[in-house]
Image 1: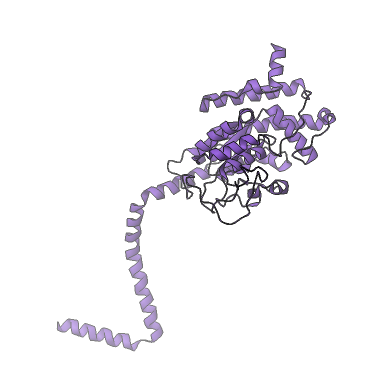
Image 2: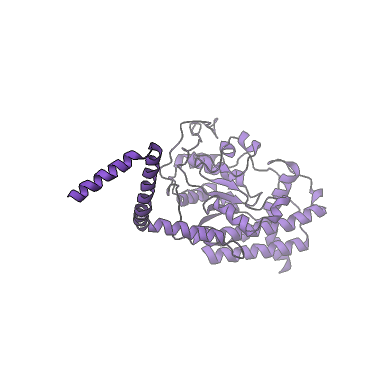
Length: 371
């Protein structure tokens, strides 16, 4: 006891004999020693309790680094527990009270009360609406917005589409307030896309968390429609058929069919979740096909809205004129037909569905003429 008292007095006098600055320094040293010996134990327990999350993050990081010489399918579909901060279901949709609002049928008495608006930000999961240009993407956006009452978004920004009432075109596509987000993948005919390989395409699909609704249209018609748009800068005007005899158009066809097939293949093989819409089936039975889509999205079907869509069977973006002559060369036909058949085989093997080839103009005509 005497020894302890002597030690305490000595320590007290030693403490009082040093300056205030030295006391503060000594305290800092003691705190550091405490942290060195106590924090590892605490963090070890924390790591043990959150092992699953840590393993998932590590796995995701490793996969994202494996980009050279790999298809990168793992980055989207083979992570066992991907981190997803978005909601898992679209039921119920939380509508935003803030505009702008849009009425697709203001002059139709039974339909004029239906509005389209944004959902609350961050309330909807990201999901691409992917298609080759000229595949009716804007018309399909009208059908989806009219059926659900929620705007679709876009990776791009087209003022003419915003002007038509699709206000999601001007919103940040990542903010979780739109039900689907338009993209053309790598299909846009611009020079910089020539250097965008598998790494860019997979990264682009991750922008939508690997989820997508893909619209497939007869590539003959889609390529013609896209050529028409590029030449007229309009969704409704029609270009002269004289342009189809140019070298520029021939090159456009070769690049176009490659990108069309690439889009189908990428979403079949690299996505985490994908649903396909065949444009020709949608054109024949819009409400039936939209009903199937809503069921896939887990969105309640509003029969009154579908009835209004039935009444308005055409939308403002449908071109009134259709290409009568076949502008494609024999070489074009061979290349396009081969790509159609490859896509059809992949779809059949992966999801058990086939393209509605009997509805494919030009493709059917060529087969008949060579049989």
